[in-house]
Image 1 (tube, helix red, strand yellow):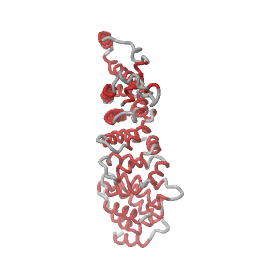
Image 2 (cartoon, one colour):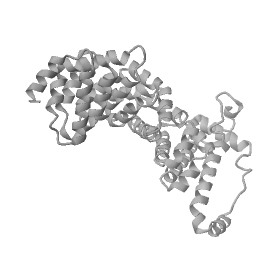
Image 3 (cartoon, one colour):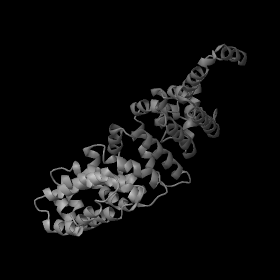
Image 4 (cartoon, one colour):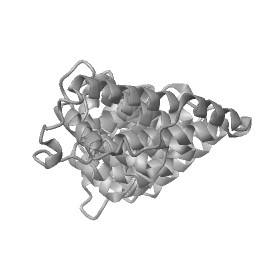
Length: 373
């Protein structure tokens, strides 16, 4: 924090603080009293936004460069590192408090100047203060009206590097706030999902999931959304073993349907090299898909039929491989399902099976005979 002390001292030397108009307590009381009730939130939030922005920029905290005249140390005696840290923490507390207010207050906080300064502070402040700033960003991301402003300020680019932090008692909390904010930003927005992939989020998500981290539930929805983002994000998924993670999630009752849908999307956008198809033709992958169809709980069964239909329609090789590995009898056995939509999708699956040139007809004949059709 020596830099903050030196820089704050330089700010005072340049008269940044002295040049500001001094307002007496009486004057403040009069001005506040003059504000109409319906303008109170907007005026207060505007003052806080401008004050916080002024404290961060006017003191020179964000503009100093190591080794420059600003950090010469001549004025470091005026403000100790402890005092500088205390003021910075108070500013963070104020920002955190206002980030929990209503939409009008949050919209004032989302000014580009304030957001840019906050993001530039990420790699310059101690972890306890960083955590408060991240909580502030997370709170802002919960408001749909703030998402565009956060995107314009490159929030995703600045948030993801914080996932690289490894040591420290607050690291898990920092990761949690970052993942929550990223989820809010990337939800139902392919452009932001693609931006997250471009900035290297996928390896971090894979690490949380493969290490069975407590943050795994936060990482899973983001990883599943990556399949829907762009060709680049799907390519990164394949390169980092994302398909294997999707297949392993078929054993998870909560995420199995979402994972199957992500697999179907990846296959639907498979390129000319057919790398996704080759991965799904492996013995382990085929067995996982057949077992999942066989053991799928009744309440989820209706939702898995469409992804399966997409998979076997896209690839005749996967269609044939699944058929000879036991999927055909399972399709026939489910034709008595109570749900009409489920029966319709099952018939569509059977139709695709018959339409495949290399599909073993004998398998279907025996299965139909057993079902007495």
